[in-house]
Length: 510
Image 1 (cartoon, helix red, strand yellow):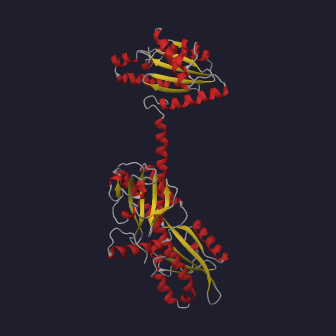
Image 2 (tube, rainbow, N blue to C red):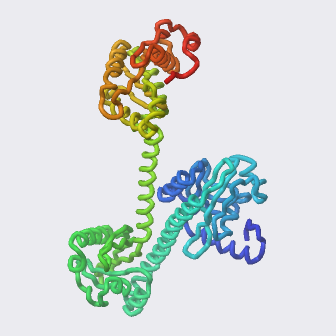
Image 3 (cartoon, rainbow, N blue to C red):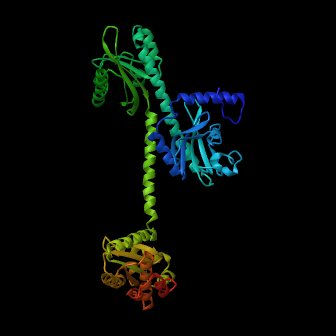
């Protein structure tokens, strides 16, 4: 007997471990190719539990082999020192926020050495017979707690892994039954009573049709499922039993099996007794009896539950994708005005400056500030101040072209990037806006703005261009507000260092 790594070391524990290993080795899971159904689940674990590493780990005699792995380059590691060895001995999740602080793991080769694991959460994975094959685990490289919601999510996803394992075990059972059935068919057909008894006590659906597609036998389980007698469907074709579109599908498959002279495995569906669809994993194969007559035999197992699990997983993936897209939008959008925020502006600024440097196309920048905004808040209240900002956020896009980049820079300040726009046109546009804003109805009526205009010059960085526009805004404020200014600093621009000495050290006043 090979050495079994089990911390208990008791005879009972070793016997149980031997049985567990035997079940794992006969499951057909070890050393198989990656499968999307497992990889989708570990990908969800990394996102929902916010970890870099997620595994479907199967614990073998002296190794742990990964049916699915995210975040590691290897498919297996030594079992000794692994967290999953402890997880499979539990009925509840194993959660270790800091592996270095846990005496069981602080000397593990995976903690003190590469990949330097620091936090672990694992849920045991059991087969149809209750043997624990391994764990679905989330692993981080820094100490951290796992929330109750994350652990519950891990539990739910572990159930879907178990459903995949159970499906493979059922497939093995059916395949074994298929092989046994094929070997016994000739003998059983010569003894009809024994054959019927065998099929009627089988946990699967079974039937036999002749070459013309007429039902010659169906077992008790199929009859009970649809509430018919043991003779009601005999000598009837699929078109006399099922809806026309399904009958056409079944007959086409049957003919392919009969003409191909080999077994066919596929998934089919049929209407259930309550109107719902039942999904089947079916196996059909042809045979010839002692009199030379051709028949088609079929057996099927109900896989509706597994299909529902897959549908639920797909729905969760779609929800996660939608949430990720929405989160991405929120991260670059100002919630009050609906305009792009400072983070988005910084990205645009780098891109526009880079393009201008390559193409030598003109680029202008407008920095715009609402005058006396603090006074508006102090006298009319912050609710009115927010309404001013909201209306401003709605008006600005109507004053610029679709190719211009408008954003709320911060507070009452707004920034507009104008690609392919000369500074003269930018200043003219800024002046028109200064005159137009106070004339508007609503919260903006009577509100004035100050505007600084800057143009990109060869050698300017994005921070330099921003500082020049800021200097123009400062000059507009200093010269009485309610105007647009093209900074004098721009005209004497020599270097960013010279610019910093010319620009006042503080932000623009109200």
